Length: 136
Image (cartoon, rainbow, N blue to C red; front, side, top):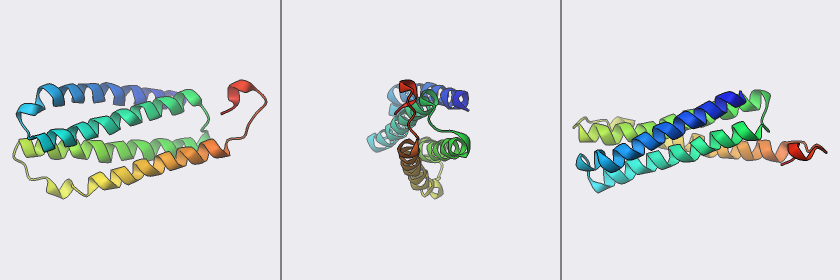
């Protein structure tokens, strides 16, 4: 599962860079400054969580069911939060009325908050071992 965390972090980072470039060089011609700011927020939070996945994958301190829960919670949060922002902004630029997706964004944000809380729980309950490479 460590590899899954690392691959997910890399993919989220890559897509975040691509979407950030699109927002800076292509989207600015299609949406107003508020839409561009929203899009950038989605990219920024996606990038934060790319680093989150990389950290968890490299740290290796989460195991078993906790690892699965943390992965699903975080990935679902990123998808609901960032992707809903992307869809809302691009949809508005294309004159689609997608306002009904608005409530999805805060649900994703809540899942991201819970993923950080759960990571804190995993870190605080990790048993220390005399081996320095396994300590927090």
